[in-house]
Length: 110
Length: 239
Image (cartoon, rainbow over all chains, first blue to last red; front, side):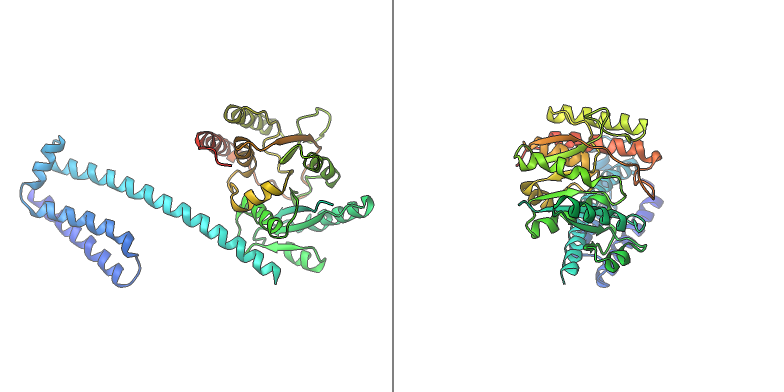
């Protein structure tokens, strides 16, 4: 990967980590949900900072270029995170329905 | 004497709610029956609830719109908490006829069924209103998949006119498919080994308002229903 690209990526991952931390500080995100993002971008940051680590992983996984490897890996991870979020939304759906029904029945009985 | 509850899910049905309820009262008086009814207003924003208050119609007002499945389930919860023996879904738009209630509860009273579906397609002459051709094709496709998954033939898979017994009231009040409730719950209970019966009824065309299933949504609806049925086929059975 070119030095420019690495530089941009480092800036970006730093930005994301700071952003997540500020969300945490303002209590806008739960710790358990922030963890996955922090770990993800921390790992990206580390692998960008250590020279040749990125190229080593790229060869190991059989990619032609490091940028391809980062891109593919990120898409894969994002898909997993997204599916997890859909599951979370579905359980929230259920809980909200239960609340609406029970409150509505309670209101009727009074 | 078994206690029977008619659950009337209503979303913005101000034109129908009173006449519908009145017909049930008239029928009770004439035939010495004592069907209770409860309107479940699914977050209606028109005058449905005012009409209920003014005319002393028992109703539950959902504080937010849940869709037909969530509304009917609220009715089942109410039936369960108040110890009803039979609960009947009775649509708020005037499609269902209270005169058939005695027919659809009969198999439950005879212990022949846990659920009875008021069906438009059993007896060829029973119903003037059999819904559109497209709809009928859809219904038979759903019927085919239910047969594949449960090995049982159900003719009117989307009929909302259904009676359930005490056991199913308990089950549905805890766990009811809120999306595409009719075909999905039918498949579920058949897989779990409950007894199902279909009884010929005739349905009226909607008096006022529009049906909740729109034409352009049909394909999407079919995909979802078929997928839901197949998923139930893959589930492990727990009664």
